[in-house]
Amino acid sequence: MGDEVVLSVGWGRAYGAELFFREQDLRGWNLILSYTYVRSEFSDHRVQYNRTHFAAHTRAGSLKQLPELSWNSNPGLFRVFFFVFCRPDQNELFMNSFVTMNRIAIFVAAIAILSLSFYPVRVHGDEGLRVYISVDMEGVAGVVASDQVRAGGHDYSLARQWATLEANAAIQGALDAGATYIVVNDSHGGMRNLIASEINPAARLITGSPKPLSMMEGIGENFDAVVFIGYHARAGSFDGVLDHTYSSASVYSIKVNGQEMGEAGINALIAGYYGVAVVMVSGDEVFCEQARSLLGEHLVTTPVKQGIGRTAANTLVPSRAAELIRENTALALNGRGRATPFRPGPETSLEVSFLFSSQAQSATLIPGVDRTGPRSVAFAREDFIEVFQLLRAVLLIARD
Ligand SMILES: [Zn+2]
Image (cartoon, rainbow, N blue to C red; front, top):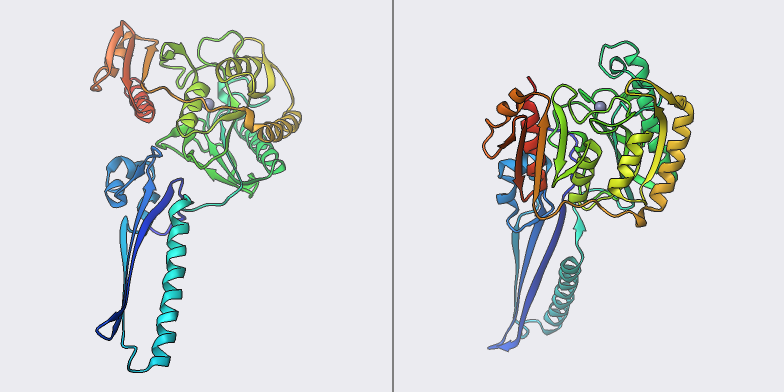
């Protein structure tokens, strides 16, 4: 709140009807009465239209998700009345032209209202190709050790340059494919890894943490495609470089509706919730294979290194990785019609297995989280964003 730039991922639409009444000779008076009713609606963070906009944005959940929704100044409901009274016998010539002008004015107003009625309008934002890029770090070319991806660690300053290079390559690929709006979300650790001053100014950068949607903060149904850069294999993978799922210190595995998934799968479900497909991913070979088997064969993958165990790799050098990421991002975006969103079902159950039983015990302090084994908990919700938020709470509380 304040005077910061407001970017909306919401949609708005309006519809209405007009009643028109005209009495030409009412005891010497000419009466025209027009009643126009317009209803204005805005989507919330769940992409559901709210009939009463103001009620929607006073909900704490919506405010936290998208505070900018409250900046839409359009009222939820408004009415327009026209009353025109004329005395034709007082000045026939003047009044005839006056009535004609009013008829034209009302006709124009009716056309304007009707055109509002049938076309959903985007509240803010540009038309054209809109691309969302989430950038993790363990899957960046050249990165093999945890101190490279920890702020203050050895070679961290180099690794963040490589991550920035790969982010820029994806941005350039998106521009090659005609993107008009690009958002890059820094998605690793404290989420302040990408060097803002070196990011291509054609993109916007989401940086810092915590963020409600974390690695997917800023995604919305107004994007056309999602790209994952620098992603890694899920916890417990053969030869997955720095394989883990959210936390190497606590998570053994995560299952979504019984299927084991890593960060990429869960983030793809968030994108799918908003109806957006992941079209291109980059990371190590094992990660790319996992992503393709989960998201489908149309997913374009860019393997930038081959793991030799967990902390060594045969890797492309950063400049070559960047070339491939640029080419493949453009290729994937041009063929994005083939990709389908990875949509969550009507209800999602999620099970987390921890490294230690004490972590599972801590997680059950959260209402609705059930213990399913010595070191596992589970929960289910209809709304996938709620599932994701509950997962984050579980991971936070079980961290120690
Ligand atoms: Zn990471």
